[in-house]
Image 1 (cartoon, rainbow, N blue to C red):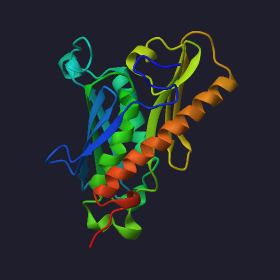
Image 2 (image 1 turned 60 degrees about the vertical axis):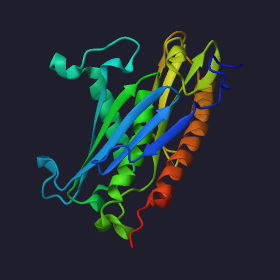
Image 3 (image 1 turned 45 degrees about the vertical axis):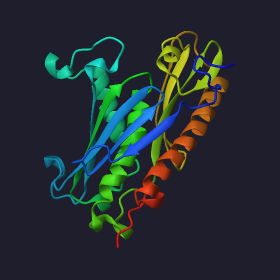
Image 4 (image 1 turned 120 degrees about the horizontal axis):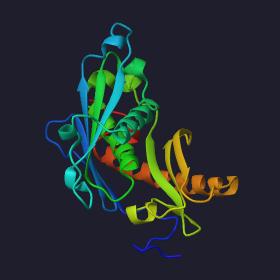
Length: 249
């Protein structure tokens, strides 16, 4: 079956990761996955939250937002509403958990890395694109600190994410918005390069799915995430961070 955008069921949308998109951030990328575009920035602070002070460990935290016209119809800024919605809280926690899963916070030392993910255009998969881009922004930021090179390098691996789902009875990889909105089952998969899961978010929107369908979806996701790792590796190698590790003279 050929999808509406011409892809095979097991094919990712076109992916690009543009590093150094922001002048002032220690690490930044613009990640594009199909028509979804997310700006990811990493900021390193030489301090930790009060509850971690004096414990010799660091922290990685995330904030996520969507521009009003990232979507087909304008959505009000959450700052204008005076509160952050439940979906935003959930996504922020996911991004933070995913990045901490591949960060040795002892080697990070008493530093906090803030990850800001701002969706400038949404066409499905904004949370998965955010995690995939945020990892690159994090690695680029940490590489700016010679004290974190070599044996002190705090990243223990890579992390990336994609979506899968069952649309019209067929398992598909990397759902665009029109597919996600009509999927009978949809799932977001967050995985490290050791191919261990950080998080699985799967929902049956229509009929429940069985173990065979789940296994097929996870296999599709793993294949897509392997490809995302190659995109991450290429960007980091070009930036002088081969294999996700900083190299300092």
